[in-house]
Structures are given as C-alpha cells and as structure tokens.
Image 1 (cartoon, rainbow, N blue to C red):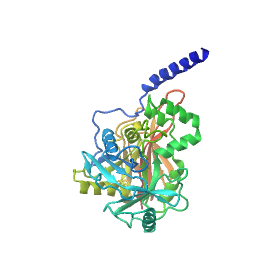
Image 2: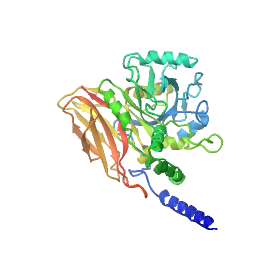
Image 3: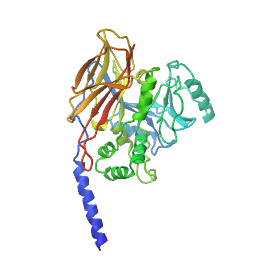
Image 4: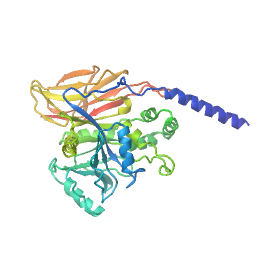
Length: 401
C-alpha cells in the first residue's frame, strides 16, 4: 500500500512538473505571424543528412517529404546509407519543397555524404563507391564543380575521422543532432534520461538542456579554414529511430521535430522561381560555396538574419573571398532583439576578437584573416536547470585576403 501511495505521489508530481514546463517558451525572439527575408537577400531553410526506410530510417520518402512540408522547410537532401540504386523519382519539387537525392557511404572508418548535380552514379557497390570517393578526395580544393563530398559527424563514436582533411572534401558537419545526443549521454546519463522523460511535455526544452558546444569540431574547422576554403555543414541525422522499437511502436524523435530543432539557411541574392533545374543549381552552389548559416531554430526563427563582409561598399556573402581595403567592414543584423541576454561573437582565425550586444553591428576589419560569427543567447531554463549560454546562429567564414 505504501509503495502504491509513493508511486502515485511520484506520478502526480511528474505530471504537475510536466504541465509547468509545458508553459516554457524556448524561443528567444518574439514569434511573428509572417517572417520576412533579410534586406536584399532570400533566406531558404533546409535540412541535410536524412534517412528513409530504404536504409536506416523508419519511414518512406513520401512520409519524410510530408514531414518536411509540415516543418516549413524549403529544401531537403536524402542521404540513405550505402544505397547504390538510389531512386531518382523523388528528386524534384513536391509542392514548394525542393527534394535532392544524395547518399551517405562508408569510407575507411567514417561516413561521407555524396551528391552529384549531374546525378552521376557513385557505383553499384561499396568498392566502386570508395574508389570514386578516393578520386574526389584527392582533387584540389574546388576542382570538382558538380559534386558535394561532406564528412558526416567527424567525431561520432565508431565513425571518427583520423588524419588530415583531404583537399577534395568540401567540408564536414560541425553540428550533427545524433552526435550531440550521444555526447550528452556520455557526459551525463541521468540528465539524458531526464530529458527523455520531459520530452512529451516540451521537446525543445528536452533538447536544449542537453546542448553542449561542438568545440572539438570547431577547433578542427578553424584550423582547416586557415589553410584553405572549407565549409561548415549541419546534419539532422533524421531517422526517427532513437528508440529500439521505433519501426513498430513510435517514431522518436519524429522527422518533423528533428527538422524543427535545427536547419541550414541558404542565402541567395535572387529568389527561387519554381523551376527545378535552376533552383536545384542555386541551392547546390550555395551549399558548395558555404553561402549559408546554421541555426538552432528551436531558439527562435532566425529568418531576417544576415551577415555580410563589405569591401568598398560591395557586400559579399558567407563563404566569399574578400579583398582587404581601408573600407572593409563586417555587417551583422539580427531579425529582432532577443528577449534574453545575447551577444554577437566575432571570430578571427579561430579566436574571439569581440563580443557585441547590439542587434545590428558594423565591425571594422583591419587585418586579413578568416572571420566568422556566432550569435549566442542565455535563456533561463526551468528548474532544476538555470541560465545557460547556447549558440543560436553559426555563420560560415569570410576569407579576407
């Protein structure tokens, strides 16, 4: 009887706490009925590194596409694992959603994401794929204009990359949601279990409280960006199979929820027109050249954010090489002032050179180097947590020569 009373007390307390955290708003910027593009640019939101039931995912391509639409994405890229007869029928527009068909392939002890603008086959088996990838990796930086080769989760347990990053690799995932969850489990199993328990009441909060900065990935990225142009990517690793019985019981976290946690925001000087061929080329080139930023959308819709490097009055988007002049400035604009304390952190060659607390800043560039920006906020999380600095936005670098 005492055990039953104790269990009932715990259960009631659990649900009361659940109702309490259900009221917590994770968004750090005011929600708007309609968000606007940044001035002079178009912001398109998408997701990379997505698995279907053709490999390690839990749902069909059509189900994932519907989930992406519900999450208000503009584009997605399928990357089913070691799939050599990739169906091309889904590579098209589905309503307003642009769908790309890539793949993720085993290479040495790691996994590489491959996409061909010309839909060039990577081969009919793993041996063919590894030969093709080895050839692409050995090329000079930027030599392959029509392919993307991205290193997925470079420090994920069991798939860690060792050695130098090859010149033919376009870049690697700075952020990978599954890697972040695995890291949180390794650091504190109790905290991870608690997040799992509160997930039904507030999924965004459950993830936010596990957040840790991907410092190891950024250390490698900052080192590499000083040697050559390289691009920082983000992968949702969406498969909805975090639970062993996902295929039979529940998809967790759902594809829609994974897409809403984090996304890639491509910045274009001209809008997409609805023509699949030309729009696919625009998105591909932006991904190839680092013309995008990464956002933790659970902290607020970043649409309207823009960061440019201006030289003699001419603006350049992220990923650009810019000639240093006496009038070179970095301009950063947030869509609105965050409700929580925030800072715009400016990095040069991997080192913090300034922290700014205005939503619109103009920073004078006096020296050549590799510059990037992070926008951080420090929301007050509900008990038992407290204030915690979390990065909201990461830009790709500007290369000032």
